[in-house]
Length: 322
Ligand code: G3H
Ligand code: 13P
Ligand code: ZN
Image (tube, rainbow, N blue to C red; front, side, top):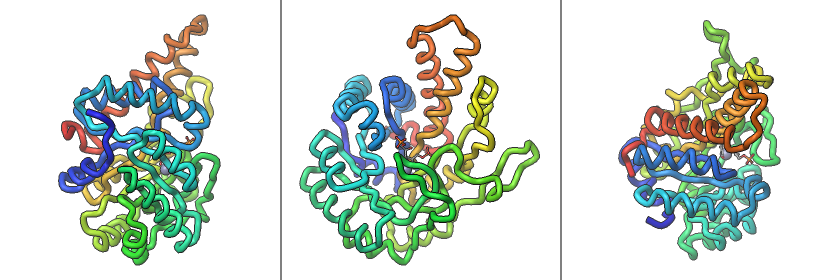
């Protein structure tokens, strides 16, 4: 099947109590690792491209890689989504350039400005058969070249969501309930430590999610910053020359719970980066004489695939839903 929008995916996910995985893609091996897992697990998927990915790999290369995945996996629905579109022009460029979904992230603007720019993107997108994700509330962490310190992050205000959605006409809404971008989501001071000495982050604000869902029945909610920072890959990185102390993510059980509620899209990027980097670091340590990129990219791609499979089956609940 050709690239799809997220409309049907989200409807089924909402009704079925699961979420669609939205994975960031930057090169061929990442696209292949994700889509091979989704094909084998019969899972619908969203491949998303950030401003940084477009700057790194070039819009056309990324669209063609995704088109190749669509050709290789004709039996699963695949959507191509712009992640954190910073302005109308970037969204327009992706809408004109083959994407089926865009995010306009005006969450750092005032409520009124956020509504105005989101509405403008929605009008253009809907005229072209493309759907729009918007955001209310601010996540902590790093996305593209924007860094939001924890103290500057703010939870979504449930009392604002109905007005925002009805005035903008957006198709899904990213909210802030305590997730955060990157591999260092929380400072040690924000966490407690378990018996193994691993940092345990503060729990997500399910009360905010439930209040939002009550006000927007049937409406798809999106969670950004939802990597769980697998400790086996942090360890692999640290044992092979890396230095990532106190990297900590969102517990997978919390994400599984969110997926059973109104959360229909869960964004995961950092976990795939950790798997790729850990695998390549370990390969170089074990094989200092090797220099063929195919030899170290092959196990990296295989580990991305297994990590995505794990997310589909155990976290998102979307395996078998294609
Ligand atoms: O939220 C941001 C995504 O993880 C994309 O990251 O801007 O480094 O491509 P990036
Ligand atoms: P992570 O950094 O937690 O993977 O979040 C990714 C994300 O939200 C992309 O938009
Ligand atoms: Zn994000």
